Each structure stands twice: as C-alpha cells, then as structure tokens.
Length: 406
Image (cartoon, rainbow, N blue to C red; front, side, top):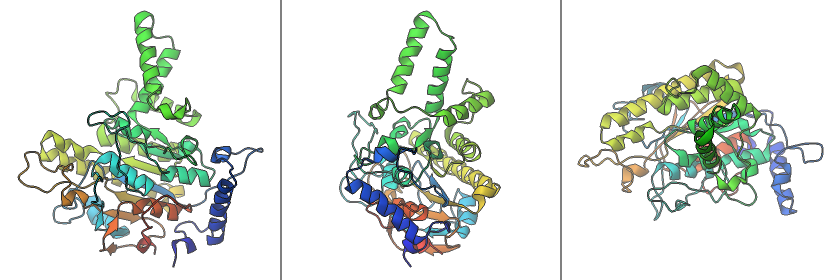
C-alpha cells in the first residue's frame, strides 16, 4: 500500500484530499503565483487548508552517537530508548549517511540532511575556519508544511542548543519558491537573550556609554540572519512565551537548565504553551567528548535519554497529543570506533562507524516492535515526515520509510 493511500494518524485527510491539496499548490506555482502570496491567509488571499493530521516531534539524537551506546541492549547508556521505546515502534537499525565524496559526518550537515532529504556539500557562508553557518539550497520540512497548510510559525519550531548558534538559521532554505515566508521559528537561549536585551533597552535601564554598547549588541544579534530582511521577529505568541520564561527563571541564566536539559524544558513548554505541530529538538551534549573524556559522551547520551522520556511522558499525559503524535528519533551522525585515538569517539575522519546511525519511529499508525534490518539512508527522514503529515517533498531525494506503517 502506498503511503499516499493511507496517511498514518490522519483519518481526516483522505488520499484524494491529500492529492488535491498538493496538486493545487503545484498548479499555483506553475501559473507563476508567488508562494509568498499565500503564506498567511485573509479574505484577499488564497486560503490554505487547516491541518488535522498528527503532530511530529523529530528528535536529533545529537552530538553524534554510535549504535553501541544507544541501540545495543548490552552496552546502551539510553535504557528508556533502547529497552522501552524501541518496543513501541519501528526501528531502522541500519540507517546510514552516504559516504560519497564531500559528504561530511557532522552536526550541522546531518541536521540539514534530515530537514531537506538531500545530501549536499555545505560550506560556511562566512568562510570562517571551522565555521558551520550553512544555508540549505532546497526546502526544509518546515517550509513544505507551512506552504501546504495554514500553520502559524510558532507551531513549527526548532529547539536549539546554546553552543550551536549557527544552527539558529536552519529554519528556512534559499529556495526561490519557499524561503523565509515559510520558515519555522526557533526556541533557544540566543532567542531569549535577544528578547531580554530588547526588553531591557525598552525599560530605560541603561544610559550613556553602556546604552550605546547594549544598542550595538542588540543590532548585531538581530542582524545575524541577513536573509530575513528584517522579518526575523518572533511574533506575539513567542514574545509571551519568553515573558513567561523570564518570570519563572529570571534574567541571570543561573537558574534555568543548561545544555540538553534546557532543550527538554523548552520542548515541554512548547508542547504545553504553544501547542506545536512540528518540532525538531537538536540535542547535542554527547559532543562534549571532544574535551577528551569518554564520560562526557556517555553522560550526554543518558541526558538525552532522560529528555526523550520526559517528552514522551508529557505527550502521553496530554489528551490532544497522546494518540496524535509521532516521534522520529535519529542521530545527526555516528562516531569513530578507533580504540587507539587520543580523544575517543571522533566523527570528522570519515570512518565507517561515523556513517552508521539508526532511526526510530513511534506513534499512531506506526508498527510496534518491528525492526527493519536493511540499509536505509538518513535523507529518507524528510520524505517520511512529509508522508505522515500529508505534504509532498519534491526536492527530497530519499524515499519514505514505508515499512514503518502498520
């Protein structure tokens, strides 16, 4: 059965309606109608259909992880994920990142492979040493989703880590038919700090030279994504979100969680307060192994496992999410297995294990307790998300993982 014949968890969207929606959007583009004219709806604009399908929570089991410490029952540091959640869904235990020339096994690149469904040779746009300010050439799943349905940007979210500022700008591509008007939004400490500094300036807290320095700092923070043309403002729903965060945790940064625990807290609040439909959580703590201590890596995996459990429990406790949310959990990259390296578990040397990852799908419409033991590609995730949510991904090159459908 084709994925289009049956969209898991979305009984309200028939195959016929799905094809009708996709065809209508494609026909408009063919006629030269700019997609920007229907990014939002009003009586003078083309009305997009409401979205009634499943929510999707994509979790980047990030910072690069090996199969041994994650899906291997005898060696895992992720017991909830390995011993409990895997039994509830479909595990693709031989997912890989392709190894053809120029394909990097790293965090930013892997994230964009997941979001776009396409391998690409990314280069830092600022040409900085070790810079990872990448810009996708083809649309992300967020853009496909918001172009297809009437979804406010505060309900499509990237939850980003404080040490990965370059990934703040993965919210949209440079594709001429998609782009900024269909972007997701971002929850991160960087976004909170920008909000906070703006509020502090509005309150008249600073004066003299300090005022000039703070104004300059805010201008630099707001200008980091030059592609938005001044449109990278977080709307009223997210402003209210940060106001509540500030009231709860204060302004010092010494009270709120840090590292991947911060991402878990942001995700829980995004579910509870923003009712997000499509989320990508970019965990990354295992990458602290670069400091040379293996415990940083294994502890990072344990922290992610705890976060996944908290998010899972929150979804199960929420009536609107419980039977209407699919989890897609997949690493950004693997890690090196060379036991003689001075610093363990690297991922920059193009070793075989750095290309070896996995994916787990769990939720309504997904087979339970199933293991798909064949090679599949990381770039299949984007088309899989599109299939679940009822939108096409025409620029994605990986096929949907259809074995997961019950």
